[in-house]
Each structure stands twice: as C-alpha cells, then as structure tokens.
Image (tube, rainbow, N blue to C red):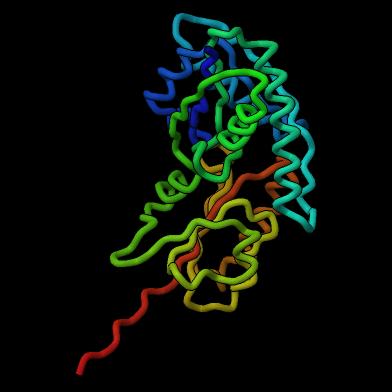
Length: 261
C-alpha cells in the first residue's frame, strides 16, 4: 500500500529540520511540492534546498509539483470557502498521488512549520482518503513551528507561572482579546488585528516575520509604542518580497494578587 509522509520542516532555518524529519526525507521516493505561484514560490524553492541538503548519497529528488487552487480569502462564509478550497486541493492531490506514486511507493509532503498547527495537509489527506479512490496510509512527522522559533528569537517562554496560553488567528483576535489567557499567540493576521488594542497600556507584543530566514524581522515592546512600527515594517516587507509570514505574542502585564487582610 502507498505510504505518505507529512513532514514538518521548520519555520525557515534549514537547521531546524529534525533528525526524525531527515530520516523521513530519505524514506521517500517522491516529493509532492505545492506551488502557489508568484513570490510565494520562495517557499517551494526552500523545500528544494532542504532536499538538496539532506538527501543522502547524492540522490536527486523526484519532485512532483501540484498547482494550488485559488482561495477566496474575503468570502463572508469563511468556513464554507475553506471547505470548498480543501475539496479542490484534495482532487489535485489525489490525481498527483495516483499518477506519480506506485501502489507500494512512499511519498512525502514537506510542511512549513508543523503539520498540526494551522496547516491543512492532514485535513486534505483525510479528505483524499475519504474519497476512497486511492488507498494509502500516512504518517505525520512534527516540525518546529514559527511560534516556537519566534519565542526562541525573542528569548521568551510562551507560559508564565499559573497562566494560560491561547493560540488563535488574526480573524478571531479581531473579535476581541481572549479573556481566558494573558498570553495570546497569533498567526495568520493579514489585517494587523493587534492595532485594535494599541491603546491598551498593559499589552506587550513580540512580533516576527520570516523567522529563521535571512529576511527575518523582529520587533518587540509595549504595543502602544510599537504597533505603528510593526504595521509599517510589515507593509514594506510584503511589498518588497511579494509575501509575508509573521506571527506574534500579545502579553498582558502580570495581574496583581489581591491584598490579604
């Protein structure tokens, strides 16, 4: 039976690729690379560089490119739009797997960051399986996420004593700061939702873009003081590079324990 590997390859630094991931890369015969077109194909090139670096014995990788279907990111029915996009992805992946991978072959998808964190690889593979037109098993190899790399570059921990952490998206953050956590990790924020809270003097932000790459940008400080700087840096980087991947930690000031009589 076919075997597919969803391999987390880190947030950008090729040295973040784990030993387990390197072993998985060397098990695979075919590598499926999703190409979105335009400047975002920097990511596809980075995947190829990782293969060149870690495949053993000078082996030339067999790469099968899959064109990513367009996605309506501004749709009012957000979940429905994502579901439709994943269905189109599943069709394209199914076709590529059936054509390129023999029944007893091993193929791999190289996943930016970690497959478990705001990535659709697992969901799409499950959808391909549910279609039941090709049979395969798959394994997931974890990777270093951009949020882990962000924390390391800012030399901080996600967690504080007795506190809770929440991971969310810019779309959800725009609806309001979570009440359950004093530390909020945010991904997929194309609209700079943090700027809505710039008047909150108790918030700090630790922001990073292209973390782990030569284009890395890092800004931190009181949100009220650096929100504008981050927005400008983000806009310049997106214009210059044609794409951006960023994330950040919003942190409330420690809450004072009540005085005891």
